[in-house]
Image 1: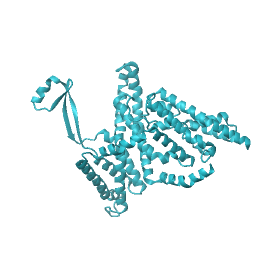
Image 2: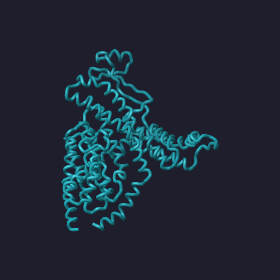
Image 3: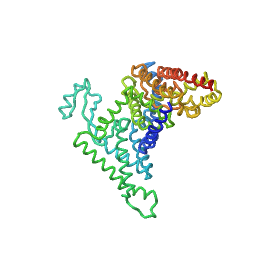
Image 4: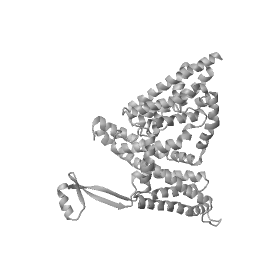
Length: 463
């Protein structure tokens, strides 16, 4: 065991530490954290409408008196959703540009604005869709065609083709555009940053106010960064017949998201978080660029699906950002709430029982640093096995329940401090079965942790 720990300290920890401190990955992580207020408010708006509209409609029938009374609040939540989740990739693009520029100590506001502009430059600018004419039946089709209207029958209705310039679709501005915002944003930010650091800027006299001087300094780098993606967009349209957003979604986003939904990928992510924590590295932070970059878009796409279809059936993604918190991190990484229960029931050592008593109130709200470093779990061979296997086992159980359709996928972003069961209930839009699965996983964690707590007792007796 000591040989393994020494090897990991010598070979694994330095690499993991470099990854965790890599400035671009840190900027991506911080950008996702920066947009949390609007992802949270949008998720809360959808969750409220579940209780104001969707559940009452399923219980009492569509258009019942309660839903009618709640209609003003339902509309308010719809407005909040439109102003948060629907523009999420735009907000992220600004946040990423800001964080990258801040990392390199250049004007961060300009970095955010330039990033935002470059991302919009890559979007499809025209819309083409069928519009159903109100109060027009299929019997009127021939008369419309005689007047030169390009109309087609659609059952008993009549549709006309509508197209125009000046359109930004929610498929690009919402969760579906996050990968484009990440890739284009990162590249455009680096063009801006490198030109700023090379002093390819407009120099203003010293007596010019700093705000004006900073704005003028960003003009040349900003113009070049945005023009580069204007050219890239035109080349993509000319040679591939698709905009950069569409190319990225088809050839980058879809394959990567597909891989993330594999059961073994979900288990591996959970395992790696634990492995990093065991050696004293903040596993969630080190893995955040991947977890946030892949599983957060999955959660938000599920949220958009529910808002459109009013059902959890057929959601595109099984495992999302909140799934890990709901089912495999109760009490914090390692499902240490199960460990705390085992300590308080079985452990006889007074010093560790005191640590458990102090850590328990915080553990209920998923804060477990006191137990990780106070027990300690970090670099403690006694607890290595349960620490590494409990979250993957819990992930497996929850994944199978979700994939079987017994519980809905997680699609609502919930504050991470929500206690066990309540988090899963809210994150799945009010599924009691999801809450029971979370409690089942807590029981499983207790069962796995208990033998090692009893082993700690025996070691104390030997001492």
